[in-house]
Image (cartoon, rainbow, N blue to C red; front, side, top):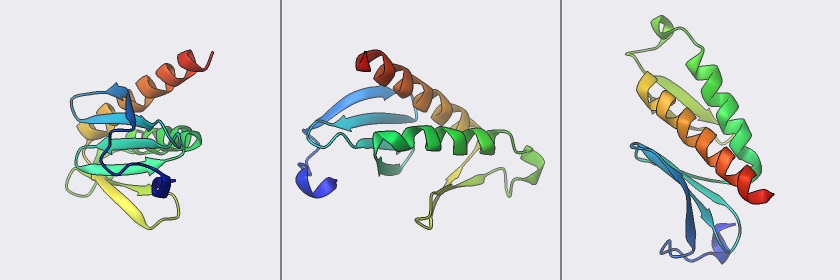
Length: 108
């Protein structure tokens, strides 16, 4: 995906943003650039639902089981994870829900 795209971000269309994150769509390949805090993920649009499901699963886990008040969000089979607080997860859920709504309204 990323090899065909401009590395300077000029081809990124803003989709949705919150105080702690943003989602942009690449106008040349359609990939979504998801910023959660300081982490940046590039995913296909079809993976947005999987990201939301992973966040919902973390959100439902009792905070008492969290190590130091934080949880790791594992990104598929990549071996990559992001450390998130409960507030980070709540914001990421709003971010993904807003982006999904925007994309579904613009698909019609």
